[in-house]
Length: 109
Image 1 (cartoon, one colour):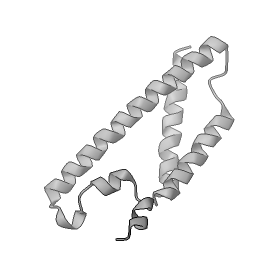
Image 2 (cartoon, one colour):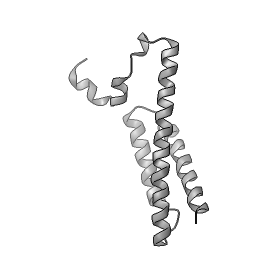
Image 3 (cartoon, one colour):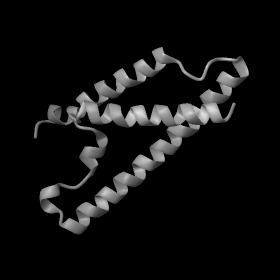
């Protein structure tokens, strides 16, 4: 593979093993590791969203910011395309994350 071919691959992709050389148990362990990373990132995102909610409360701002939500969804779609993942799936996941954050923000007011 030429050096410039790796520029389109994520760091995560490059550090993971070659699936053709891994057995089923190794692949399942890989999924477990990825799942843990996903949960960790969701926890980090939730913490930041809670911080945003606190700032909104202090400033008397509304819970919902539709222009920000649209920007998040657009970025989600762009990121999905960059990594060749189904944009509708990624957007659905982000929609769920946004809705959960909004519920938590409303409950904390």
